[in-house]
Amino acid sequence: MSWFKEAAGGGPPPSFKEEQDKLTEDDPAIPGRKVSNKSANRPFLAYAEYRQRQEKLHEEWLEKKKARDEKIARGEKVGPLERDPTAVEEVGVLGLLKFLLVVVVVTALAGKFVTNSYTWDYEARWMQLKSWVPEGQEPYRQLCSFHPTVWYHAPAMANHAPCLEECGAMRLGHYRPHEDSDWEGGRLFSPEFLATYNGEDPGKPIYIAIDGDVYDVTKGAAYQKGGSYHILAGKEGARAFGTGCFKEHMTHDKRGLNKEERDGIEHWKTFYRDHKNYWKVGKVALPPIDPKSDPPLHCDPKRKAEELAAREKKAAGAQRPVAAQHEEL
Image (cartoon, rainbow, N blue to C red; front, side):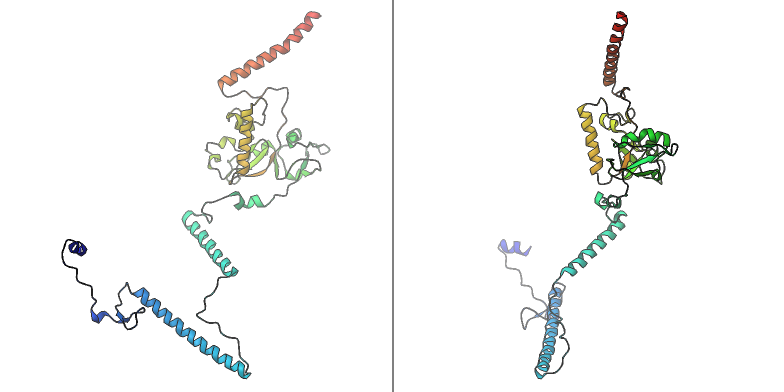
């Protein structure tokens, strides 16, 4: 607080002077001046010492270069000139690549130590090996094992169900390519075979299907046993994704859905297709929908009542022509 005393009218504080016996080092900035070896001065002193060493090394190199040039002038054989030890090295492409490699390795090891994951729990789709390695499957048609002389094929893979029902669980050995199928590759599942990937077996991944497309959702905790979405595991439930009736509408039957519900299905299809942790593994061969059957009733009581009323009205309208024919007879 000496400055406050001076501002209040007092005398100036005494100037600081170091003790002469502590001034043991040469000042690197002012020739002939001595400074102490206190901690505040040590970085400057160390740098001055480093510069002196560098200058000495450079002078020695200049002497060697001068001697080499004199030998060359006399016609004597000389070896290659040594590199100047004080020359600054420029970082080339190889040096930059080495630096980046070290950064990647150190970052990965730190991630393994902190999060037990080399990628710091970052698992984007492009980092999944399965998304880069195609499974090599092609369009297939099935040779039914119970009817070895009968081939069944339809361009739409959903129409394979009649044959699948007779042949049971699907086995890839029963398939061979077909030239006019629209199947884009991956594994082909029957509903029964897809049901085995429902999370009950810890040795198998968890699959779900939406509108015929099968996705691996093993990394989603909600799809594990006991999770909120476990009801979807191992099943096709396109209609449920649109209506939200996950108990009543686990089916691919989309008849009678309004535009909002159909848009909802498309939204979820896009969600699974673009998700960083889920990827498509194939398709499920769905059974055909009987056009004469009624679509599943809605889980909402109001919508259910409306649908039942519409069905009764439709049934009553279909009976009137039959009654009119009997009166004419």
